[in-house]
Amino acid sequence: MKDFVFCSPTAFVFGRDTEQQTGSYAKKFGRTKALIHYGGRSAQASGLLDRVKASLDGAGVSWVELGGVQPNPRASLVYKGIELARQEKVDLILAVGGGSAIDSAKAIAAGIPYIGDFWDFYEGKAQVKDPVPVAVVLTIPAAGSEGSPGSVITKEEGWLKRAVNDESLRPLFSILNPELTFTLPPYQTACGAADIMSHVFERYLTNTTDVEFSDRLCESVLKTMVQDVPRVLKKPDDYGPRSNIMWAGMVAHNDIVGVDREQDWSSHDIEHELSALYDVAHGAGLAVVFPAFMRYTMKHDVMRYAQLAVRVWGVEMDYQNPERTAAEGINRLIAFYRSIGLPTTFEELGAKAEDIPLMAKKLNLVNGRKLGSFNPLETADVEAIFRLSMAGAN
Image 1: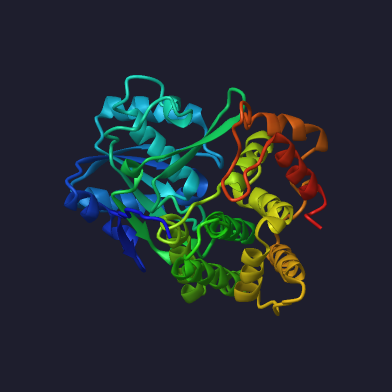
Image 2: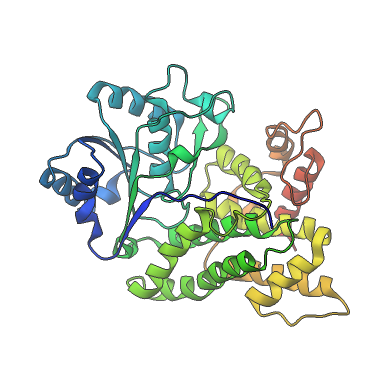
């Protein structure tokens, strides 16, 4: 186990009708004017935006709004948000939506006090400092951005998808009402599940030893998803499993399950090139990339993969041939993704084999730089993983 310091300062307000407490929490934290940042029709049509605005009004917190966030949120809207927030002198960026709205809100928050281009943070040229606080009303359990220090933005010029992680970007408070997820389309629910599970896999696949406790935490999150996602796909308004999924999504990515270990994140970086180029849902891309990554790296630590297969998927351990156990665990992951309606092949995403060299090249693995830590990857490895995903990692 590694030494660590863990701090998760976000106030999580969980339960039915909690969006009506948005204004009181903004006021509690001394906020006076919010920029409400959201996607589009669903937040408006459902009446959620009106309820949030009424809550702010009732608490005496003024607001302006900026909609239009897209999946794989765009840098162009972040620039607009920074300009609007500066003009209006807001002291809170309130994201209403899922990971895309939250990540865009964090980018705006970081960019407001910064003299240069906010994209500097995403290229590692500058450090986030004194961002405007962010708050969240969550509608899609997936990205975990409601509790994490991370943000991912796509820059249209060159279609670059990059991430920044800074502890100052953890939200001030997050409103989590599972009822807001009842109307999620099945595909969006499934994509969110793949995203949540991938956040756990990135931490579970580690070279750090003596991490049995957090292994069990990881496995608990995964087993919850395997149990409850099929339940909500059959009955979308089932509050119990929706609650489990929403809380599991936060726990999967606020880092409580991974602070004690070396983490990988190569699969996310690989997927970012897919979703940047083809604009596919992040969870769908991960459902294709992760099994291929697992196949490619399985021999690096067969027993870790076998442990995952036994504890999460219920595979019987074959002590004479642990590779068989490990491989069966990956097979069951693929079968699970297929059972909830996710793509598992490159072709199903609309991706093209001829684009593989370009996507691998954009990761800029040059001058000895490698991707990830579990089984560090070079450009040729990334290309091989993409090619494995063409066949669904079979």
